[in-house]
Length: 213
Image (tube, rainbow, N blue to C red; front, side, top):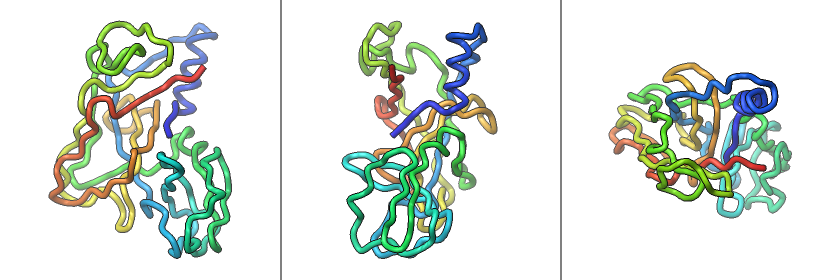
């Protein structure tokens, strides 16, 4: 899953229809976000406000525990990834968090030599809508762009997520610290990042943004 944040959507609407400058970032700063409990597990106790990702089909969705309890012995079939859905899972309840991600509510990685990665906005660094790896002005029909260059973070000198948690997604900001979030996306699988691991990297073409109609 992925999407423009509320901030980005408001900037786009004001630029298109209200005569305002878009103010798009000259450099996209890629940040990593965590889920406190990583991927949802069977027959596991969850506390209020624990976060976890749930695999639905081939992709992951982000959930928060909104009623503390113990998850079911097998994942309920009622998870479909619908925005805001509340799923009774054993004695716990998990609520889907797209609205929170759109609003900029997530936990960014910190410590262990972590830093956001800046990628200059350019035709060379991000593909045109006509296909991955292209470097000319967009001429495609699917509204999709992807990274032409790898996004490589510093080598970790400590764990980048809570014990029992995982790195689960990326957020693009307009500053190396602080700043405004423009886009969020979840990883294809949660990742444990520990002291001494190789520098985490998102290969060219693996970060994808599709602008809907």
